[in-house]
Length: 166
Image 1 (cartoon, helix red, strand yellow):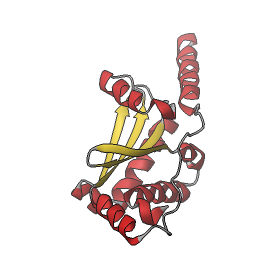
Image 2 (spheres, helix red, strand yellow):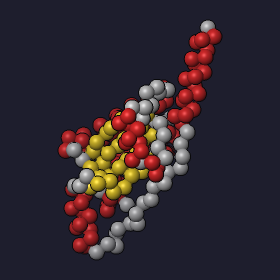
Image 3 (cartoon, helix red, strand yellow):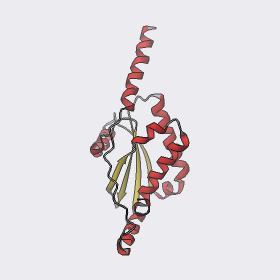
Image 4 (cartoon, one colour):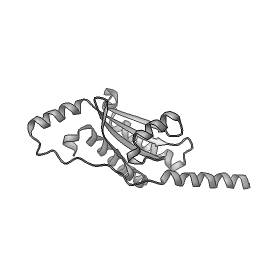
């Protein structure tokens, strides 16, 4: 019985680590509504080569709320981006930060201070990361599935079309 209590306490404490988040360092570029037509045309051409990666960083051991966050994000992305996923313009990728390849990927976003149970969007153009953002607000929306999905979908749409979305 004491061992069972110890395991439950350890699970709860590890979950606290999942929920800890640092403020996002994302910087949104200024709106491009006043850009000259040539700049808009270049941006639209770049948007056709844009791939948005949605990385869900997690640890091997995950609490129930962390698992639920991954499931909610998976569902929202698959339901709203079936065609862009098929076309390779949206990529959903859970990443285990306890594995070597996950540690390497996490390090690539070190400026965002990525921890476990966090979702990061990265906009790639011609294979080069142009912009990335940690979606800190998602964890606070877990009790409102519609708001969670809307926030995630809106952020991905903005990354798919940076000129129109920002």
